[in-house]
Length: 241
Length: 202
Image 1: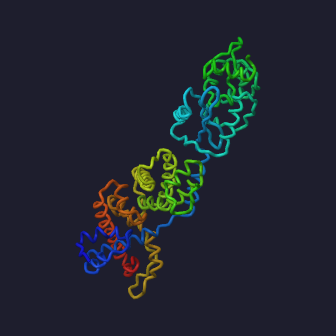
Image 2: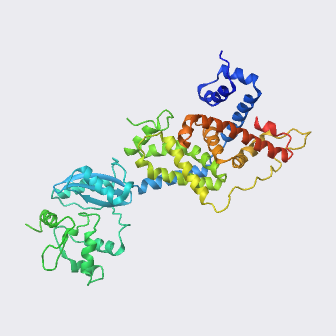
């Protein structure tokens, strides 16, 4: 059996815990008071510190925190329409954002991440509001009438914009209203320009159909995705030919 | 295939992968696996149970929000402990005054009448309760290795990774730190006139 120096023995102390008892080490400890004291101190301290227990209430609190996190966690789905790839972000509380892209699915997803920060998780397949919203969005772009009744999470949208969006959501499929109509609906009849700006930042087009709001002189007015897209959507719904 | 969440042989990387694919229960299993150690680490650094509980929660929130960026370059445990360590050390820096409370009296837990056998069980409970306060007497350079090794049962090599130290440095600090901790306990017990303290440690 190799005879250990004190340095070797002390260096072995911690490894012997994982690797199992070492006869050479035991031999050295039997003869060496200093190293034995170090080994005793190790066992004593481990005994003491290893006995620290976590309060049960804390464990419950952590579980609650994790569940909250999952509820508010942003999840993402991508889907392809005739207008290109889109990406949808949502939490258990509702749909937060839809981004369109002229590029690939990955590009649409990247745009989503850029708008929302790093907290959007990778796609997480679950049968939830994200799935049903995507199914309906695909059907909608296919020319079918669908009822979007998934909750929308507009909590980060400023309050005037939210009112504008809520009024716009009431315009029926295949119909249009002028900006002034929306302005009257929200009790600010002169604020047509502000209505236009609010619609421009609609985070959940086309679920909230801002494409159904047009100028009073019957020209189409602006659209976040460009006039071509607005025309395409109104044609899809049968308003334009 | 869905990993068995409660099986300790299911490694962390498998749990993280399952969570990323939508299995929320895998996240729960991961938290379950590390929560007690995280708390011990926090308590060892902050020496206040209240603060350690808050810090554990803070570290969990930090972990949850950084997990999407965890690329698996290091072991999950190394990453988590480093994150917990930073959370606790930052918290400690923010303190306006030291939070460590003075050592309370042993309050009759240990009989100190030389003729009478000490109540070893009660004494040990007392000591377990107070150990983090003794630990607070150690300089951080020695306290952290001792905590990670003896409270969290990490191998010296992983501790070296977490603290950015060489392996021999970790081992040397463990030896000195433990000796110092034991000396602190001895000194306190002797000053308090506790003749039976030796039994408490064994």
